[in-house]
Amino acid sequence: MGMETGGADVPWRAASARWFTDRLRHPATFAAFLVDDPGFGTVASAVGTCDAHAPSPANPSGLQGRVSNVSTDPRRRRHRHARVCLDALLTWFRDEADVTVVELNATADGAALYASYGFAAPRRATLRLRMVRAPL
Image 1 (cartoon, rainbow, N blue to C red):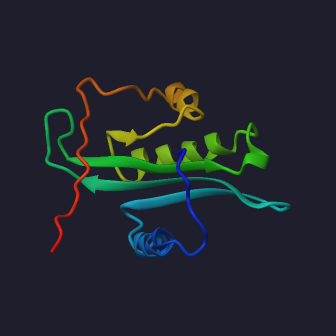
Image 2: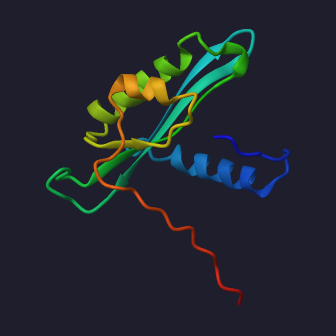
């Protein structure tokens, strides 16, 4: 998403591996779909989670889906791999997780793909506050 990822030993990579390992133990609230290419290995993926929120009139169950990552190897872009993965993930949200609301953050590169599925800006502003821990 336009961020520098750092080298193989940066702390977020180990934290990410632990997060994925933990989520794989919870198939009711986590799914990942991949496209594997014999010549390149995994070339595309879509990852999603389900989170419990307070129920509302628009979402009586309170269950909300989150597409946390859709990515494609630059060497295999424009082959519809991301679309195949996203199709599978959205089907999982609808048919297996019974989610009625799905959110994601889009890059400029992915915006057209998401718009083709009907993703749109929320009706109300989404605000974010980045918390900074006070020194001990």
